[in-house]
Amino acid sequence: MNINIKNFRKAFGENIAVDIEEYNIHHGELVGLVGNNGAGKTTLFRLMLDLLKADNGQIVFEFSPADGDSPLPPIDPSQSEEWKSHTGAYIDDGFLIDFLTPEEYFGFIGKVCGLDKAETEQRVNVFEPLMAGEIMGQKKLIRNLSAGNKQKVGIVSALLNHPELLILDEPFNFLDPTSQNVLKNILRDYHEQSGATIIISSHNLSHTIDICPRITLLEHGKIVNDLSNHDRSAEQELNDYFNK
Image (cartoon, rainbow, N blue to C red; front, top):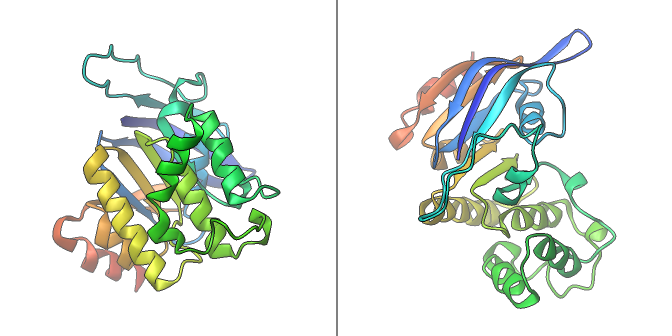
């Protein structure tokens, strides 16, 4: 999926949260968004997912059709629902239905995605290295899980429909070091195998530099740098920026 953003702006009172003149993400890119608190990363994600309305400007999704399929016309996510079946996202635990168990929640997500019970279970089982035996079969409601395990439930649910566009906000938050490394491998493998467009935000520079060939730096809602990061080439520039 290609994502094209132009003259995109969102303010809350006098605080400008997002102010992007032009920004394009190309099909199959794995992009990291970095910036200090208040940089606009989460607001940008919420605008992309039509959870907030922009004050002005436009975002357009352009899907890459599967072999033999007719191409979809460009989609403005604020004007259409068609993009949702192609997209997986997790921003925070507000995405979860916390009075369900993880099994019930995954079953619900599977039904929404048109999966039968067996297919849903098969897809969930792939993520057992991330869940580490702490989520399934515990007879716990999601609300009673640790913050890290809630995070894992959200990430797994975002990947269940094998999305063409995956958006994750601070996915490494609350995860222990082993789970962080497992998640890095999951994201790398999914990107390589699916060719999906993946956008993550993270305060963890090391993990972002490890997995993202392109890193976009935001400050006060504006893009201040857009870096190629092949072979960790952006590391020094990012460290200089955050250490100034």
